[in-house]
Length: 310
Image (cartoon, rainbow, N blue to C red):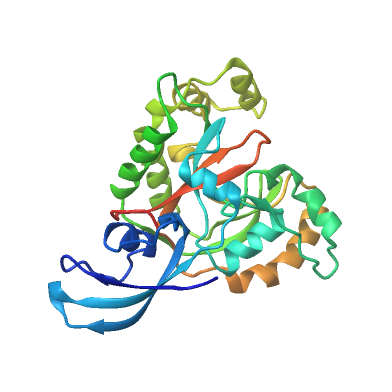
């Protein structure tokens, strides 16, 4: 990391709190030549002179160290076969642990080494996380889809931003480790109605960007044994577990037998418990894309109810 000193003057009474550095730098400051706004992670305030519309601020712009694949994803240079809307934890201990546990960091677009945990070597972690790894540490809001004919990634990104801004942040009681559908995941500890409504809004609002499910995709979903209600949603929305059937979860493993799941759960619980927020607030959503290798990358993280990217 390195710093570049520059002066900026606010043209109006724009609040600094909660405004991302890249937004300020690209819209208010003269960003030094050769430094892209997406590379700015921190706007460190040095001094403030004056107040109100004439306030001048001495700042330090700190470029964010990101991988080439993430930069390409954000700049639209990487080609994606499918897109999805996820909840991904904000940068911090939980996000870091999830990326290392699964072995794939969506935000950086790169593999990460598994941790060595007591009684649970990295090799075993790699085996139990093989299936969910490429999706990254997330909870699905709108499941992966191919773009409809005539739709493009740029239009989807803009529509995603507008849809996210139409909904306020969601606060839930908390998260807990649980076994659902044969796999381990973090699920809502209490009423999840608010996030189910959020997911329904995103699914319905952006559905015109989704290409119809193929016969192969429909057959794969039906192998799980669907109820009439789930079959109806599969045909309407391309996914059977929405609205009243939706269950928020951050997947941690593939399918495990009861004994194996119990052993891994007993190892994970004391590690995860201090990392889980209580209450748990979903303040933003993430648009992701699937690359040619099948791995998902963060494209854009948008704050709920806000006016710009996080």
